[in-house]
Length: 191
Image 1 (spheres, rainbow, N blue to C red):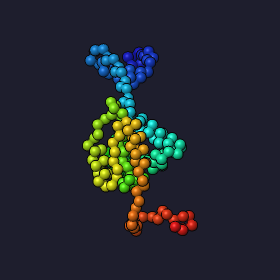
Image 2 (cartoon, one colour; image 1 turned 90 degrees about the vertical axis):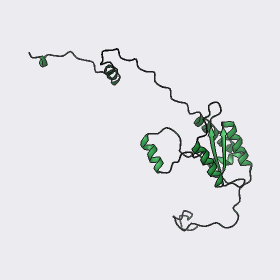
Image 3 (cartoon, rainbow, N blue to C red; image 1 turned 120 degrees about the horizontal axis):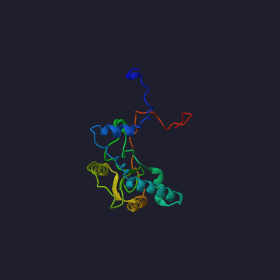
Image 4 (cartoon, rainbow, N blue to C red; image 1 turned 30 degrees about the vertical axis):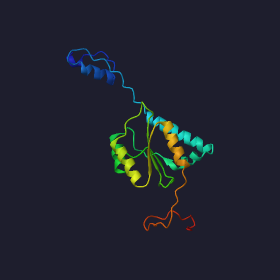
């Protein structure tokens, strides 16, 4: 019986982890102990933003003036960890660095709307990035109220103050677009 015809004892199938540990020890040394898995960072800012939106919805249900902003506020999908391809796709579709966390599309106090940059409550807050500062400055220049709020309580105060201002009135006539599909027409074609 030749060497390759001998019956080999059945071997237990190794997992990828066992294989990688054994390949690390090919030099004759002991395999390195498995590293402790890294804890995922906590998104303090995202958690506070979710609580803020939930609070705003509650204010709407209670009929509070600030609750009016609930239907006019939205969050652009800018931040967060993403796969490289998804991030590249989103960038091609118009995602921009520095855009504020919350946008209120309700014109008040002579402004066109509100851009609100929310940071977590100190000491868990991060600094304001240059791109965020530039976005706030540019928004203010274009006629939008811009604010930075450090934490949930300050964000509530900003929204309450903004909601207390009178609605901005458009005075005079406005241009009408000649291009684009008419979306104002009803199913019967009437305007």
